[in-house]
Image (tube, rainbow, N blue to C red; front, side, top):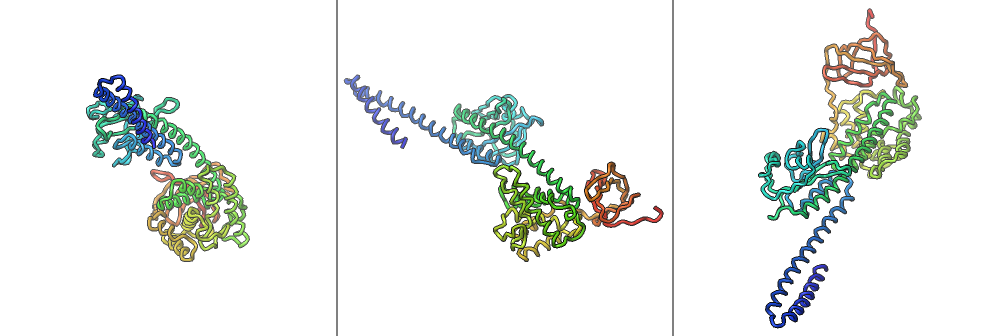
Length: 493
């Protein structure tokens, strides 16, 4: 439509100009026609430039308006890099971030890069120079002739840099926090002043994104720290399950990544896994810490922890994208055949994330050494039980297949070795209420194997006593909660 309007305006204005010129130069039609054609050509190029500029900037602002639709930072930066290359008609674009502590630049996005990441000292190469000085660098001649250019990346990738436009990313406090670099303009004229202005516009947007991402990251880090502390407090209430929540989280997240779930789904699952047992805070100690199997009545009380989990987590103001955390966390005991709890959901009624969480929770419970109601199962036996539950219609076969074939159960390798030497370690005697003595007592081991740690002590430890152990190995220390399963008095002591 714009082109049609421009065409008729062009013809009409041309006729008017020609008539005026003819009247002024009525004895020279040829001269009038020549002047008319010159003016016509000038008008054509002027308005063509204006229209092209309008179309170009319309495309620029169209790209910028799309930035708000991206919630994942890495995806957003990839979109920006690709858009810059397309708008500026260049071969590649890279977005560098500044790490002031290490005095380096590193690429959060390096379009079509054959190596995973570029790391440059600030001051090295064109991008490093821009990060150091804050100057805009535009090179349309052979960049290899510029003393600021470093060919190291070209040598690593096989790419040949010819022309460069590099602009600093500056935050509101005038700090240089990154660099956007565009390589190899595809036309022969090289990068223009307009290209420079457009790249500055994108740098301003990237600065806002980085600042918002850093602020969001700090808030998210605080949230994760609080959630992990919350889960650790719940785990500590029942020493037999210490570390269970974090192990379940690792299993579940690994499954989700293998299933190619998006970053928001993975984060929801991570939080739900960390917090899936917080409802146990509402279970009486007489049941939660009971040695041996529950009575039917006690089991019914224990099952309420899933609903309590949802009630507690629903009171936390999660970000909107993580609003499903309370529901997913509360459904980790639901089975595909409807025999689970708390709601007896069936099949697709159970969200995928809850089905993943259920598998992770069951597997960790099966292999755990510290459950009072059962012995630990080997990996092979635990996997066998998972497949038996698939055959019974309780677990999602696709999830189990991924978990087993990709060996996602190997987040921690418990090597079955025996240490036939004395190793120093410390322990604290714990009561059922998890009260600890003030100072650890040093002792010596007799041997360590898959069956446990055997040691000699001057104190008596009745079977079932929980103790906190620190094991001092040559290069590292192991801290854990242990339960005494066997105790005997040595003659003469």
